[in-house]
Length: 188
Image (cartoon, rainbow, N blue to C red; front, top):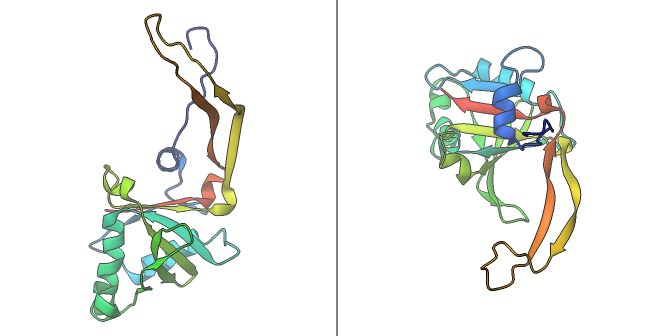
């Protein structure tokens, strides 16, 4: 700030992966899917890197934009019969739509290295990041609380304010650790 003090800013996981993620090497966590030339070899190699940090239950969660969900559905085809992948000699298996205990709908993508839960994320679809998917590693998420929660009463915002304003104040949020364990995948 103007006094030389550090200002703590938030950064979403997408921005963190774009800014600090690795596009190659053993800790690669940013992957491109070139739609026109994507092959089974590419799929196997990418999923091997994605499952480098293997979850206890064998399932990774991917928050998907509409384009990313559509891509995997097109690869599989209707009822797994006639998708692009099948025509090129390899298969993509996606389970039926299911609903978890929180009410989110998802489909399971079967990979050679584990299962990926594809979860529709409308906020990605309605942004410049339609065509992106973010894989979150549940073991490397944390809840950070910087100051205790407070109930603030009778806040005066202006001298001429005729009323009472109350609020709950919370300085907390989600944090990520081990950035390499989170993945970003996007269609090109």
